[in-house]
Structure formats: C-alpha cells, structure tokens
Image (cartoon, rainbow, N blue to C red):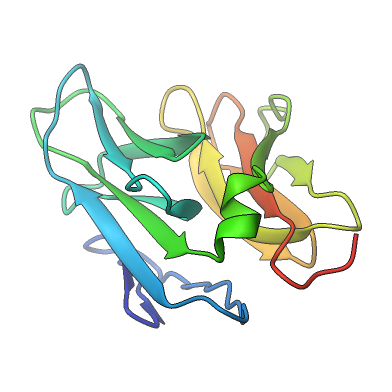
Length: 182
C-alpha cells in the first residue's frame, strides 16, 4: 500500500515475513502525486482510475483477508482481482502523478505484460522496459491466486509463482520521464 512517500507490505497471520519495495522517482516539474483507492467491489474486481491529466505510475491490491489474486494495468486504470472463495473485498490502489503536460499528452507511459510463467515454485515471468525508458511500476497477476510477489530491478519486472500455483504474469509500467533523453 502506498501512502505519501511510504510503501507498506502486510504479512498474513502466521506468515513468515514480507518485503516492501518502493520505486522512487525524481521528476522535474511534477507538482502532485496521489493514491486513488477504489473500495467498491463488483464481479470480483475493484478498479481505481487516475483522474484526467494524471498518469498511472503504480498499481496495487490490498485485502485484510489475503484475497488479492493480483492486479492488471490498462491505460490509467488499475484493476485488483479477487482470488475467489470468499465474500471479502479487495481494493485497488492506483498511484498517480501529475506530470508536465508535454509528457502526459504525448502518451509516454505504457504497460508491458509477460507471458505465463511455468507452474513450479518460484517460476518467474519477466516484463522488461526498453533501455531508453524507465520502469515506474511492477506487479503480478495470476489465475487461481498463484502470485508469490513481484520485484523491480532496473528496467526488469519479475513476478514469482507460489508453490502449487498455476503460473503468473508480470506487468511493467514503463515511461519516458520529462527531461529523459530518448
């Protein structure tokens, strides 16, 4: 969960520990950042959307009941998927930046999705941003609640399959930041 400049990871009851990872950006001319949260819940999803003129730079799912299956990104929408099997809610959390107009208007942010990983424990799916772009968001999505987590390193987003999972997808949010040479 992103709150201001803090990224928080939650461990399930009886879990063995979790790690929080934040992607920090310095962008000249950015005047505002916000986290948009969707608490509504229909058809096993919650959708948080960045306002017009804002750019989606991160997407997450939160559930107090371990019911997040994963997230997907499409344009400025962050969709959190429910794992199924309960009536508990999930919430989508979109991290949005108000970037200088020349960057947002030119459509300089996009998502890259991997193929489905293998199904063995810790199998990895990888989505990579081109070398001339910057990785600004990294997430995991999987059928049947298989995500063991995701990790951003440089321009690579890796998603990991949990033990007994059926495979995962990695999804990277890539962008050309204002002032970045292409």
